[in-house]
Length: 311
Length: 238
Image (cartoon, rainbow over all chains, first blue to last red; front, side, top):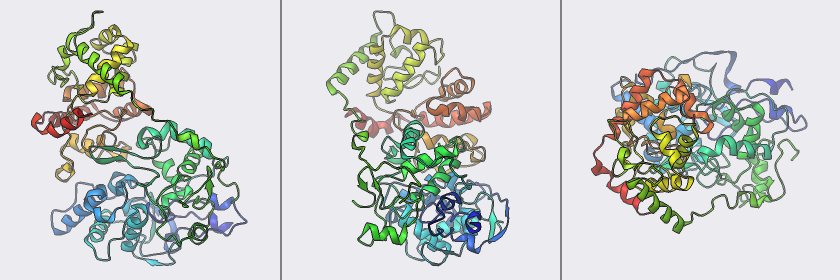
């Protein structure tokens, strides 16, 4: 049990990884093999977290380096336009990484940047930051990974690097990923989550999780369905979603839902259909066993008579 | 899988059905036509014509701070009229007028204004030229997240064109009107809206910040009407 009580610092970007720290889901299932912690924890110095504030948003240098920083920032906030060919859904990076990737506890880019290269259990090798970004496009954006060296990756990496000015490398940085969410008092429940969704989430994300558009642009991101992140994205994992929701939702009212409510509504959200995991082997059961064999993933489970991932 | 997460395994297929009842188009048209008459002439019960203050085409009166109504969602306008009539939204001019309208008339006039063309939105990538020194524009486009304050456009749309029935357009409203509403949200003379979001937001703004952010949208609202053509045509077609 000791191993799982270690605070797992997030894998940073909302796509592709086990993002939030969580000892709960694991602690409740001692019979199961303990899921591997998010990879960066393995390579990070376990010392006390360090505080960090990124440079002011308006202090991007006015030179050729700054131009690339700015390009990265624009891709980040308007991915639909500036990285269109690599995106397969309606999302923009900034939908989860709030305040243009600056906000603490919403998987800020400055927290992620200094944690790579890192070994990730997701793909069982040491990933560079650029490869991590490719994972975001493949899973969270349900699109195509930009090829190595592509300007999209260069720009995003440059923006993340600039945001990390002065951040300690390979240390735990406060505000990285999402804060650890306490164990729910009651087993997370779909029906309770559905009620919370209707009360607190549907206003923006729509009655069926479809999100809302304004003047042709995504105003509120779809949470499930064909225009949302796919089954390979970190956010499909209930413990990650619960941690994100608790810290950041509803927008501007982060921290107002109880821990229990966050677990419940995350369970509801992540029990809906969404685009197939791009690593799909042809068999849902086999894909679950290979990539989703943990209780906080609903992939391959039957909900409302439907096998998730199986359509 | 064990019951780590309680999810229904029996079908609840009907749950999601029929959430969106179709709009009754003939009734809507009739309602909108009745609304047009009320807007132009007022009612026999004494409600004055909307055009008196809100302009011939519902464009509002920036100098007086009377809001634009054209192109706002009918559901939003209905709710506001109900709030005026019921005293939840306090305004010495609108309260008596809303009370003079029947519930049906309030709906009709809201349907009419909802059917008119919306204001042009902000240029969508205006972020690029954003300067921190323009505090109003910065708050509108970026917010102040150190204080958990979202940008206006995050809920009202990147172009300020509004989102659904709950988040009204800001583009097209005057500085005076927006500033007055921010104060009303803050001091409680207008309900805080869904989830009380606007009360929370307005409470984080100083008077100077409210003016700055209102001025930002007011400038956008002053954009020439010529650029509305596309939006107006699209709106008018429905």
